[in-house]
Image (tube, rainbow, N blue to C red; front, side):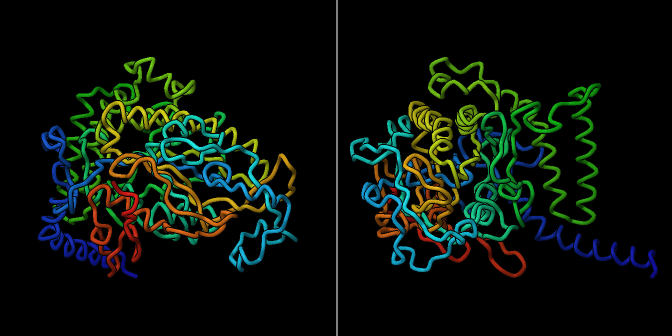
Length: 490
């Protein structure tokens, strides 16, 4: 071994690729960074246009400018909330017919059960809205805005366990490593605000903690895209972003001078080796500097009216609660954040479902309805797409012991419910139909690739054309699948 020779060879390779990158590659990179480079003006944002993003996007006139995605991690039971199956009352404790399951895969948590007894929902359903959509008693506030929703009962996926299922619906692949939906939108469409990230993630507490299935940062990561497209996760305690505040003894003027010197060093290094991640680092440092002013203003809700706060419910003033995050999502939307992901966990109800789902619905019902009404009264619902749902659904058969008042449900990927509102979606409709057991799709299936294709379409993006070449292949959010669900579009 010769360390000096090895080091010289490495430097030679760096210089070669660096010189290559500073040619055509650098020009392309500059077009991607666009107005997000330090010193750029904010005029584009002021005029309602995007900064950064790819040339030629959006592909066509968008109906939505932004998305707020309310993600129920753990998989809420469609049978107890949205997919009304009154015939199942006569099937209590009877075995699920083999002809319904038809040999379909089940999880290891119930595969050892000797039987699969039917567990009808104990909750009452009623028709709501002009079109008479069935909604459970668990969701009285959401039932009040059902005329603004497009309820899809036939969403389906191949993934049957939580981590691959959440990874799949967020990134288009069950395997980690792909960019998340928000990262794709940041990459393709850029930002509407130079002082806040294009993609923000909010985590909601339940009873003072998080619990439930773990959520890994790769779910809002950038994968093989530039790291500046990854989601920025805001914290509910202390500084919303770690190290956002200047440390003791550091003035704003000193921080600005330090960043200017760091910028100079980074640019010298980029000129030498041409690593695009150096440009990402420059942009991220500058964004962090601007966020020192924009984030405290964002999270200060003292200027909200009491009427607005009351609309979101009693927990809205507690940072980190789902209610507080729904209000924060509206404030982020107002400020031009392209994609806001609001997570809430603890929907994984394999046992004691009636008690647990009452608690969860009590947490999310009023804030969800408030978010729809708040956006609507501000004239923002037309160009803001709100999405609600989890990674898969729940089985009609019981996991564990079954009584008239208590049951659990296992994972069920074959059909589950999501709803969309605003941003180019038809209001007041229910789409798709499942069989009497909410086990199989009977009409109008919507695969998660179809759902993601439709979300991109609402933002003016052809999902087949938003691609990134990596390791010799063109990747996209919908992989090689997906059809836009035109029937739900206004």
